[in-house]
Figure 1: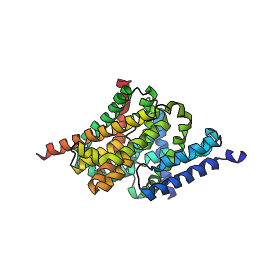
Figure 2: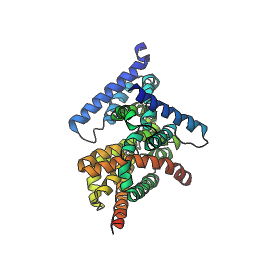
Figure 3: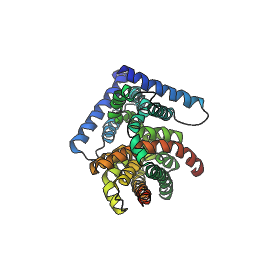
Figure 4: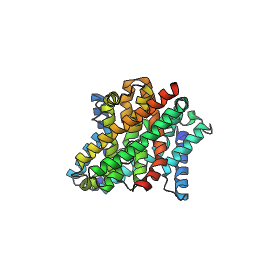
Length: 114
Length: 229
């Protein structure tokens, strides 16, 4: 198990180093994810050598968002008076995004079927 | 008060609130009882009521959120496992997700402006359709406020989980692949929990779309941001 985390943390570190050395605001963890994906796809890392470690993290993914979420305390001023507007915006945009994405995929599948 | 200065205070409070959130969610299985939402509803009032400074909580909280970076990196694993599914329906999936990513960003900007949302709030909303770790990273990048983005991601996920079947009906989306891709692109893992109940194909496609939408948005958002703001 510790080997699995060694690989995961080294890839994370590599992503961070690349992020800091390029002149473009590209988040380190996302670079790490892309590197990790390429390493898996090219079979340079065997999926069995990281799967258990990755699954353990993914199974409890939600816990890592809690501390940044608690930071809401310092943003309560900005939130007050805007809650309803935010909720309406989120609901409407979700409906529109599901609708348009679904129609697009359906259209592309049907077109190919003909 | 001195006891609170240990990082263990924040660590324990976070873990307990998370466990309570998970238990409540598992018991009722209602999307609105989102475990993170419940955890925040437990922690924030405790800190406010006992006048515990955010910095005191963060000593422990930061230890936990440190793992956000490796948690983002390992998102590559579920994406890799579903790569064959992507290859089978490459054009419809890629085309649909790209359109979905643009739709999400543009609709947030447009509706946010129409409703007169503060610019900072609009910026916080641009990555709200994505899985939380990627949404957080991108929110920082475009000048959003991370905790607000997290709340927006939750509302979006809950909306998808509650309304997905009705939305598909209204828009006459009948194809199972189309349903799954739409739900995952717009409402990440929380919406996907509903897609899984709708059917095996819907669930798998929705899960795949989370990763594809995350990766594509990383490239699309910074470019669109320059045009829009």
